[in-house]
Length: 297
Image 1: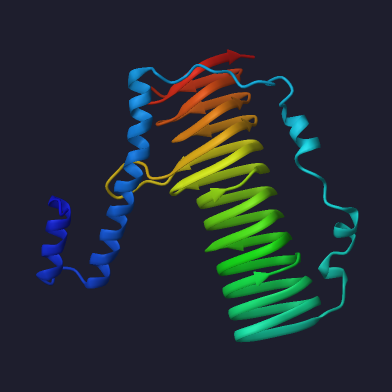
Image 2 (image 1 turned 90 degrees about the horizontal axis):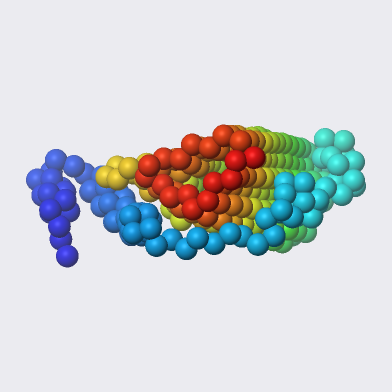
């Protein structure tokens, strides 16, 4: 059913005030934001009615950052560190279109189009523009992906950047920059920045910055500094939402999040959040959010 906004937008297109491309882009964004509106309305109804169930997660004391460090995030096998790509001799590989890269060691890989990797590869630099499917593990000093990538194994790199769709079992690196839709079981890095939607189990970082666009979910986040913001839409204040069971850190800021437990030294709960329990020395909660229980350390 056509509403006032879509009617006026259509009139501008028919009158030649905007191009077809602009018309379709704005219309798509508008529809996406209307769908996300339902999530925010649900949050607001719960906050206003005070009907959110006051439940405390079981096993709170056992679920510490140290426990997660030991049980959830396994250290990289020593062989992975010793066999860095830069210490090995390899060959260069370039391809365009539909191509297959066999397992082995390489210096530089530059590929565009539809790329298939068979087995494990090691490279100083791997750059892919297009689609990538790897049925093994990838070790690279620098990994750059522009497009979509499905990696059945693990990704280990000093510098990782991806700007499309990325699926991997484990993602590990020192500097990680991801945008788009990211799916993983475990992600571990020193400096991690993500902009887009995320679906995963465990995420560990020293510095973590996330700008969520769409619905995202994680089970656990462990980081010294955590910043989770919601990407702002054209017509609404927020678009992205994060559902997470537990967040552990020193300095934590979240908005548009639903969480069971947030534990840190300094915790700021921004707008549009629903949190069951916060444990911290210093806590600040937005009037637009709901925290069931606050425990001062």
